[in-house]
Image 1 (tube, rainbow, N blue to C red):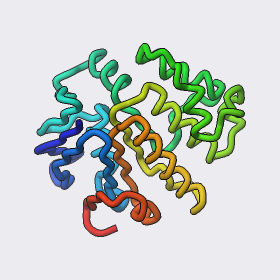
Image 2 (image 1 turned 60 degrees about the horizontal axis):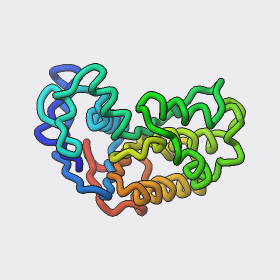
Image 3 (image 1 turned 45 degrees about the vertical axis):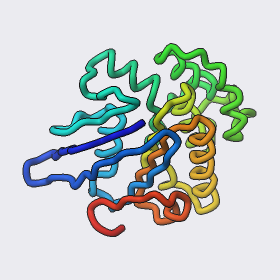
Length: 210
């Protein structure tokens, strides 16, 4: 389902990231551990179609991601990849429901699973609330719901537990795993958070020990 091979990237010639090859089948999960500055988010962005590698290839369900460009890449990403950013990329003046419908609109999805998704994530009663009235934990769940609104084949999460206490950190990882299993999607979490290590057994560490 997801293959990344021979990937090379650097922001300056004297700073090469060590990027391992990745190969995951449908429904498999991977934890990428690394210190700040090790290139975790850079890898996530390349896997998600947001940053083109200098060399190498990313394949999702047989499609070479960076052979696509412009609108075609945007459409493919919107339909197949759900990204949960470290800081929630949701529109605070809109309601929870409106944020999900916006994600549906851009990928031309029906949005018929939005209600179930909000119930699964425990924020259905907040569906009419403006995002800027939510707690940090609730906003994170809306961010997850928005990433999952189009039933993606690939779920990418960037430091999803970084700002959460132990209890909520565990809940968020559990929710991500449950939703990935429900969609039979690939789940990749990148983090420096040691608390996540016990939740996903398939792990790689980049840039030395965390």
